[in-house]
Length: 491
Image (tube, rainbow, N blue to C red; front, side, top):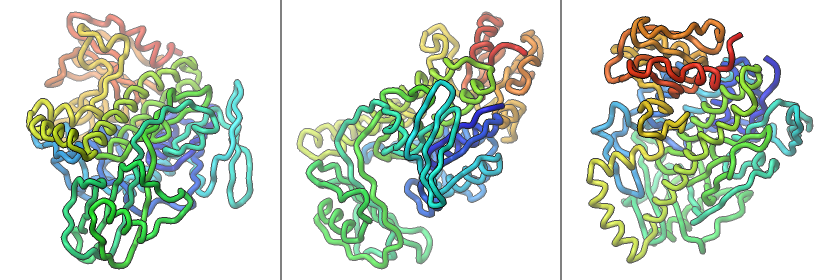
């Protein structure tokens, strides 16, 4: 394997992408401007779909070791959605994001990723053979050559700007603050106020800090410059604008400001440069959707970069990253913007919220809002047509990844190694073709029928998505084209 992929940003998306590349044998260098890892929680929700993804890579047990609580609710514009009827497939783990980042950094490092903290991408030049990245570091500036560059460097992505990705920006602007304080006097009611959203989250541990959270959508309120440190006075002023009350707080332990508008890259690829996560689709942080969507960006892109670098796939395979992930990112942006609209105060919006109060009680509406962002189906070879198999373009069913006792199956073992898998669900009766010519990036597994999986055979990509599905009526029709498209020719 030749060629290095340079990744800007050592947040969860960049770290997971580095791990995916290393699984496939690709050299990965991660440049991170911050000199040290994040020690505080910005977000704290991990979706079931992300847990499934981590299970497929064998890394979720590390996060489960701390017994993070399952949260049976999800919020939509301050309405609580009921996850209880869907807890087998849809749940939220209350997990501080720094723990997820710690696990991902340890995983990437163990696999051999080169993570360089205090190193910032400041320039880039791409040509037909690769990308030259200018890097600034305390030890001295230098140039780094890679086959590809991926910007996982956040909503104000330097990579996106340097590569001149066209961006669509839409309002309203949000301006929020987080403050972990020793104490805050009085009773504070979380929710919507005429000036925005406000909440106080008391620590469940004795002596632990309380978190103040503010969020303003008021376009007339201008946040301080990005390079101005957050102060407790700024938090107090924001609280006063939202609630009309002045908080009295104890010692401040941590402060954080987040402000921006919804931003979408019009494409996720510019030649040999890609964007992922917030660099591709930035929206206000509601219910962990940004983290989940970004991590799946990484899962989608990593194995495709490896296949092209290994010569197993043409360059056009990389175009499918944009084709598949950009609609998902757009849907996440629309979903959060619709919530921002409902959170705006005013007589007309109040009437609309009265209607939503009734709508969210309907099981169909509740389920739709829960799964709008996370229920992903790629339009693979006509997957959107009514007569195609319902699993085509969807994640492989969990029944095939874990057995009845929750143990990993042969399917999981293949996915954990970053390989695809051709699954025979007929104990050999399906007469599937020999995959030994693709050994190293595609495994074959034979087993009996699985409950609730109406198929005789499945072809699963390394990212866990079904690329081909067969029934007794269709046989192996379409399998060879799918094998060539996603796994190249035999060797």
